[in-house]
Length: 138
Image 1: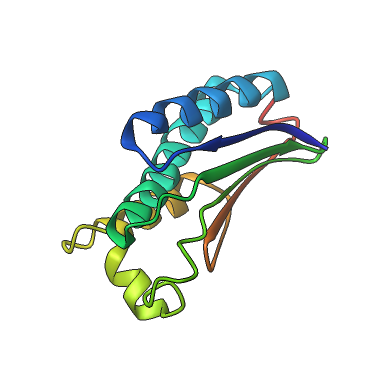
Image 2: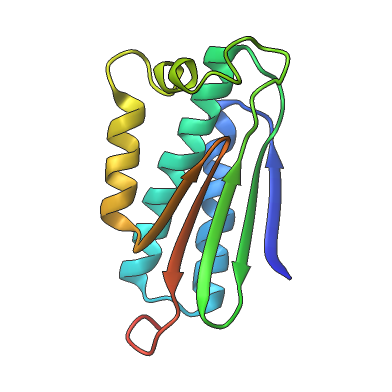
């Protein structure tokens, strides 16, 4: 069962809302403040990347975030499928090119996320982040 779920329009001003929800859920899960800081930054990067991708592809579909705490892991999954009618939405190269502003920002964001999060899975249209809920992290 999700601890929280959120759908936001693909607008930069809503990234803050996603970050606040993720931080509140991380604290509720009992993560230490150091890890909560990592959650804050990683979620900001992933949601901002999804919003940027939507904007560059001209999609107005919502970006969705689902947070789960199953007692073993705290996970955040961000999905934001671009408009399937867009010719670039099914082309991984085109999507990668649109993931940043042309300067490689999308790749930098994902590199930062990989440095902050123990388990990262990047799939077509989604990014899943997971932190273990161990005695050391709570």
